[in-house]
Length: 178
Image 1 (cartoon, helix red, strand yellow):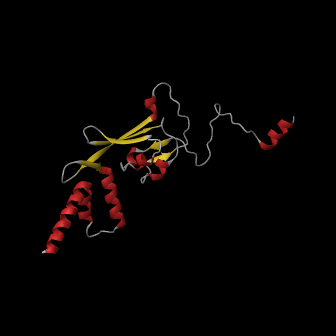
Image 2: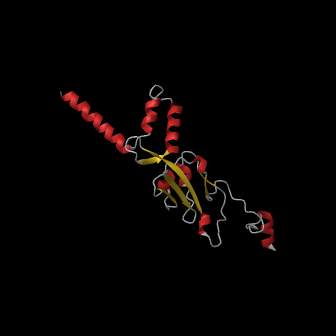
Image 3: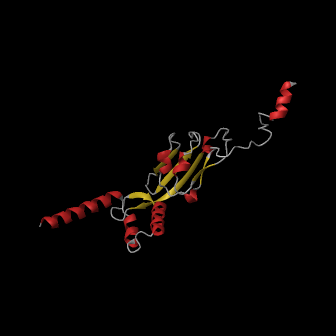
């Protein structure tokens, strides 16, 4: 009888989970949800993922960046949610992730179009990332008179930028020597 008195005083310690929906607490780390429309393809989530549940790679033709999340590998650490600059990945309160026989139900996938370099025509970054970077430059208003030049600079791959900088430095040093 003492057990019934304690239960009445403090309440139930268990839940009728299968028969009632379980309400998760605040800040619960459930399944990450990917919003394709917000993704810019920066790959920060793939770099931050300790379990390699997020894989980012180019397709064979190198025309698209493929973003793939495997929920079966995820440890629900929340790093992807923390590092995503646009909020394309958010942790949900979903915890019922069982599937019958098809593991492909645990995979989320997105494809982003790749920008080619204006100089060497080599694919180097998603077009959405360039647009995002340009919008941030516009918003910061740091280069109001050089914004067009900055936009053109965004469409050049890092290797061509480095080669142009080296060429500029060598011509400047040669002119100073003479």
